[in-house]
Length: 296
Image 1 (tube, rainbow, N blue to C red):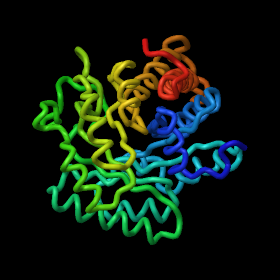
Image 2 (cartoon, helix red, strand yellow):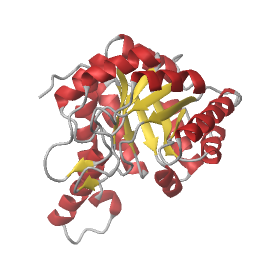
Image 3 (cartoon, one colour):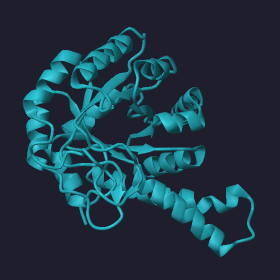
C-alpha cells in the first residue's frame, strides 16, 4: 500500500509539504468510528480519530485504541488514534501505555509553569515508551466544551492581546520538546447557536508556525468558514479538529430516522441516519482539507 511504512509523524509531514491538513474527528461510539473511517476511505486520505477523557471513559481506553488499530491493520489504511484533551500526567501515561498514536496534554487548567513542567514529563514518558507517540500541548485558552454555545466561553482568547504570542510559543516548544502545538488564534471549542464564530487570525498562524518550528493543530474547527480553513492550512495548520459539527449531524440524523419510523426499536436501523449524516460531514471536510474541494 502507498502509505504502509508511514507513521503519523510522516503522514503529517507529507500533508504539510503539500499544503494540506489531516482531519481529526472525535467519536463516542463505534458507529461514529465507522462513519469517519468510511468517509476517509471514500476520499482516499489519512484520518485521525480523537477520544477525549470523557469519550475514552465511555468507550474504554484500550477498547478505543483496539478498534482503530483493528481497522488500520485489517484494511491497510492510515487511520490513527489520538487521546484528545487529557488533563493529567497519569492519564497521559495511561493512553501511551495503551498504544495510542498521539496524546494531547491540555494545560489550560493549570499555571503556565505547571503546563511546562507536566508537558515535559509527558514528552519524557512518551520517548521512553518504546513506540512512537506524538505529544501535543495547548498554549492559549479556546474554551473546553464541544457543544452548542450561547456565547463565547469566559476566558477564551479573542483579542490580539489574548492570542498566543510567537515568542511565548517558541520558548514553550524549546522547553518542553513537544511534537505538536495547538495555539489560540481566534478559534474556540464548540459552535455558537446564534451568529458566526470569531474570525481566525491567519497572519498569526504563519508567524507561530515559523516561531515554533513544529506542526500546528487547529482546535475548535466546528463553526469555522471554509475559506478560513483553506487560509489556515496555507498558513501552516497541519491538523484540524472537528467534533461539535459531527455531534450535531449525528443527533439530527438519528432524530430524523425516528421521526420517519417512530415504532422502530432496532438501533442498527434507526442509527443509520446518524451514521450517514456524520459520514457526509466528514467527507466534505476531508475533501476541503485535502485540496480536493474549493471553499464555498
